Amino acid sequence: MWIAFALLAACGSAATSLMLKRAVGEGGAVVSTVAIRGLAGLLLGIGFTLLGTWPALTPKYWQTLAIVVPFEVGGMLCLTLALRSGDLSAVQPIMGLLPLLVMAGGMVFLHEVPTWLAAVGIVLVVAGLYCVGLKKGASWLEPARAFARSRANWFAVLSVLFWTVTSLMHKIGIAQVGAIPWAASLTFSSSVALACTLPLIAWRTGSIGVPARVEPWMRLVGVASLCFTTQQAGFFSAMRRAQAGYVNAVTAMSILLATAMGVLLLDEEGGAHRIAGALLVSGGVGLIALFG
Image (cartoon, rainbow, N blue to C red; front, top):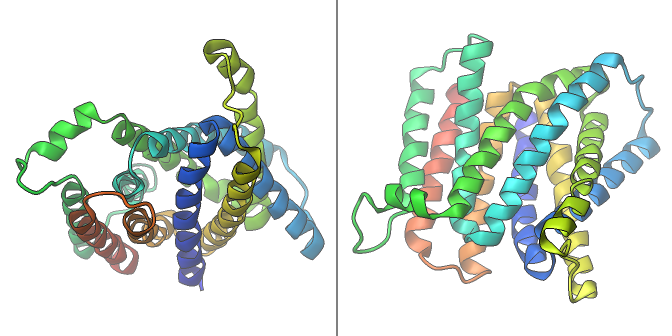
């Protein structure tokens, strides 16, 4: 059952990335992220309130939420900035590092050792990420050199590092209140925390990025919020039922979907090698999910 939830989260994640990429093209990155997260948090909270009963909010729940929110804010802000400054099909495959780092964190903090088939999956993921950066006629060292020049890549890597921490902490929050209440709490709280930075952004840049065309921006935000609500509901429902490393590996199937969307719908360049790289990454995380 957890695999079905994880695949649902993967579809929601890919669609969210696509809509977020378009939303930040109309309005500011932070404003767009705050609006999408805030609306998704409300949808999750209202939905659970109508269908269930909220559990008692323990001191450990509040402590865990206070620890996770800053890392969640850092991760979503870095991903938004990466999508604004780089192609979706180039940024999204870097997120394939997340299940690897979560698994490494499990080895260090939980003493979990991957099987040899999971190690093969790691090799496939690394190979896939490298293929994403290849260009016809360029040197095989070009992707490594590009990391020093591409802000989008570095923002994506920072996002992965932030979300590695949150992935290792989600189990605690879910154990306290359940999957959907934790998803609603984290999503809405991270939106509020990020909104607190808007005055600083206005002071430093003179604007918070209010969209010039409000109506199309609001439509994009609405669709992105629905996609993100689906992603969060599926992801945390899966996390409740399986190990964090396994869930992150299966949800990384969003890499393949997002890369295909970026090439086919956004007319991004270099489709063949990027899709090949995404396939390798997806195959690798599939091995991790099945045999890790």
